[in-house]
Image (cartoon, rainbow, N blue to C red):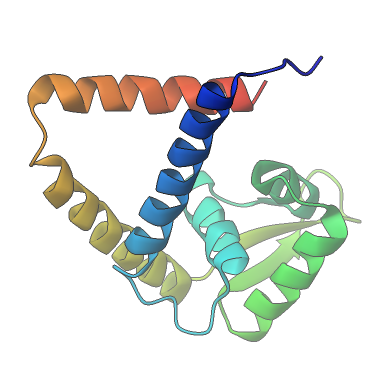
Length: 145
């Protein structure tokens, strides 16, 4: 059920939404993904952080369709970022994993982006950082329901 919101609440939501988008774009500039699209970089990051997984599981984790993830993985394979191996449980399926160079690239990007974000957070008071972390986690949880 969609709630009716006041103009003031909608304006607040729009401002917050736009701010989150700007933060994301600014942090993306802290690392060079080369020719990778944001979707490819995100999928690769998930493989590096979560470990090998099947295509369907990766698609679910990234909240995209299996055909979309299949196209992303095809490009990542061509670039030497992802490799496939037979699934030990189901030989008809494959398990995807990030290659060594892909892991190095993602870890470098993550480090640069996290370092940039940490530098900015250093300008906040301790209580502001705690509130921000708690609030963002709560928003993610609510959106994920």
